[in-house]
Image (tube, rainbow, N blue to C red; front, top):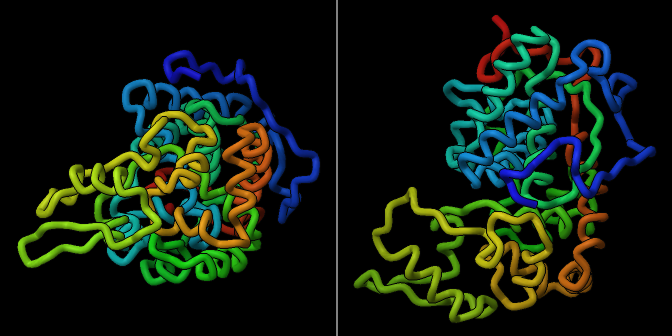
Length: 325
């Protein structure tokens, strides 16, 4: 699906589930039907507009959702600015997409003041980002409220690092109520997006002269040489590479095909093929994109309702970067 041809009402794949395991009656489909009927359309239009200018936006919005939901639940706590907030952790300093969320919030505050939460905007924006990039449009419930706590100390114990073992990743996902199957499926998010050189530097070693060599035998040597050229010794920390070297702007099953070809960018990617517990699912998704999309729709839905705050919990922020004063 071409980014410039995106239409919110003309997706070829719409997935709707009737068994949403919501945590509160306040979380529901079409939550804003009466209070702000065009809320989802306004978010989608903002994401579409930003993505048409910057094709890296979908990957940034999807990553933002993961980093929000895995810490304190899907409550937009990652958006709060200030000393010792989640955003100050090194793992979150490279996050992007904040300007898109803020733009959507400004529009919504004009038409529906103090009605649509930043947490819902983050979830809807990530959902639309996947669809814009060619993936399935997943219907998700809304009604999340914005959290009021954002602590840097909560980040590291709750997010997956690119150097994690399969057991470490399963443990984190399990603590969120997500299964081993969800882990493999949601790792497919790496089919779009960018990564900084430091996120996979552990797969190489440097000699005293700064020359790099491959130490991780699970990585294809030709691909490894390409990565070393893009991330040479002394390269700027701002340099990035595509998560998916083949179809970087398209949400598809190429990520799993890359794993089969030993072209997983992160150690945490490659290990999904190497481990007996996850290899079969990787192979199945590599061979069947529709199967991946179906699984994605279910796992993504579960991701978006992690630890949501509803009813009297949290608030509806007027600005996504600060709590209401």
